[in-house]
Amino acid sequence: MYTFFHTHDGMNCVDFDHQQSRIAAGFSESYVKIWNLASERRESRNASEEIDVSGTGSPRMIGHSAPVYSVSWSPTPAKSPAFLLTASGDKTIRLWSADTYKAVVVYKGHSQPVWDVKWGPFGQYFVSGSGDATGRIWSVEHINPLRILAGHLGDLEVSSLMFHFLI
Image 1 (cartoon, rainbow, N blue to C red):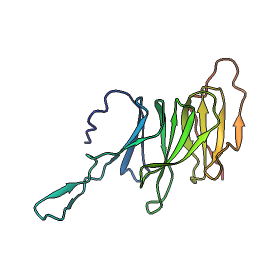
Image 2 (tube, rainbow, N blue to C red; image 1 turned 120 degrees about the vertical axis):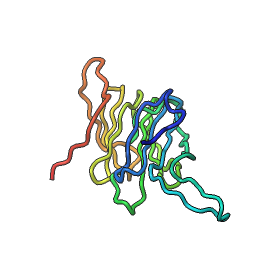
Image 3 (cartoon, helix red, strand yellow; image 1 turned 180 degrees about the vertical axis):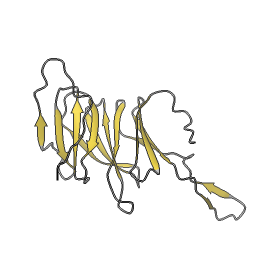
Image 4 (tube, rainbow, N blue to C red; image 1 turned 135 degrees about the vertical axis):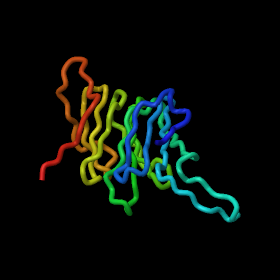
């Protein structure tokens, strides 16, 4: 059982990585936090002291200026670099390096809060849904969307989505 301290207020979303070893959560206070779920311990330089790397020193990833509504881990093999997508009320999507905890790219295009973001199956494309009643298809290689999926009439927002791929 894992206990996440100080997370009862303002946690909007969570996602496990594909190895089930880390969890990311987005918060109303506009940051993302990652916990390492591996309960390993390693020795420090002082033989009588151990370093706990089980997540107690969980990093905060700061960059959004509004609540984070969605987090999505990249579908990467275990030895590949891991990335995290986040969607926010600041109308942006950010691509983060899970190794350095730094934002790599900021994607802009929506005119309202971005409610959801999901990776495609191979980690090159992703989709986003927003309060501007559009879905968008993106590539990690471009800062602008590849396609805008419009047609939601009235006050309908795109608040949840899924990437589907046929082989």
